Length: 196
Image (cartoon, rainbow, N blue to C red):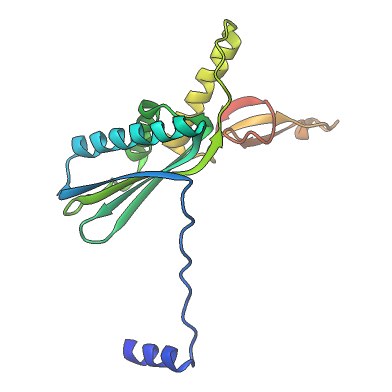
């Protein structure tokens, strides 16, 4: 049956399905292994090393990652991918690792190394310019930063669409006084935080 389908495709009687390529990441770091790795400790150590390398690149360019993806290439050819989104541009490798571990722990189907991973890649799918950090003695600013980090951790654990915040609307109808939007989206201004 597959021979007939291939023959029809070659003769032009049937269209060949297109498989679009993935968009190239803004930045990436990868590590290849001579022998495939299977232990959780080795995977975590490799992710931390890749996060540190990616952090150095981000520091040089004055950018921070908003969408981070880890790709695990198994020895048998299967690729496992996990992604985390952040509310603010991020450069700290330990925070990157913590968010990735939160995401790994939340998977219903744990990351299966099979015969081992021979390549692990960390990709900054979306990197933005960062503003210079200012030291603030305002406790509200520090609390906002802590809440932002908490939102990132909750979104990594439960999914970014499940952590929402309320944004006030300009209406006289009480039921429509606010709308729930994803907490990590900055397009809607400030609002109250909630876990849906």
